[in-house]
Length: 257
Image (cartoon, rainbow, N blue to C red; front, side, top):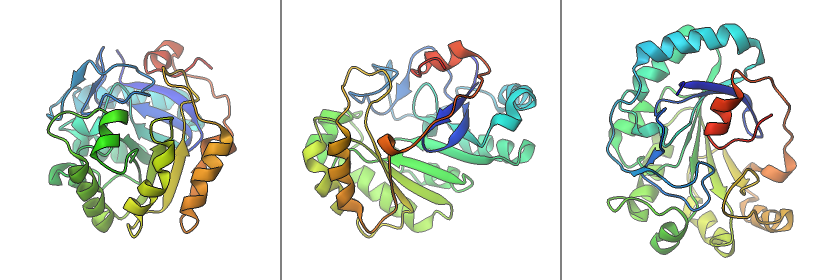
């Protein structure tokens, strides 16, 4: 499997070239979220390790940028699992900054933000989009199904610590589904007072075993974040950018085109 894919036409990141530091056949993640577009997690783990060498990634990314660099707004760490599981993430960030002047983003579930080494690895990223889908342990287990060593208390504490030290753009994404739609006001209270730049309200519009909530439900959810800039998936537009390889995009649960 290749480690660079896209560009993805993103409602948050415009044209985003995916950088996959996990890049394995099955998904590796500390969560097994009920809504995930890659479906069931093959390896539910919080253990960090090296999946992809930076040297191989550099060669692949250099070739990709020659083909679609002009069609790319962000280089985004995402892919076949949780990118902060990659123990060489900080090295990967440095490499991206070295070979390209594109903004670097990451899509993370925030499950490992309690770790100091993960928070440090993210300091060089320009735009961090982290998730918070639950206000407590009970909803966390229903929606995100974390590994046994990850608790809501750890996630909440990690997000608070990270928001205090991070100097880039920080967004909190909430994936709104049936299981948590009645708890958005509680989630809003959990992030109140944190130093974040944006709240992103999402729902599974891409292929998922979980149906999306309606635009009306998201509009109601948006009302709880009046003091913070808020984006909503139903309100954002996408373009149709040519891809490096349609199959690599589809493997990661994204529709063709």
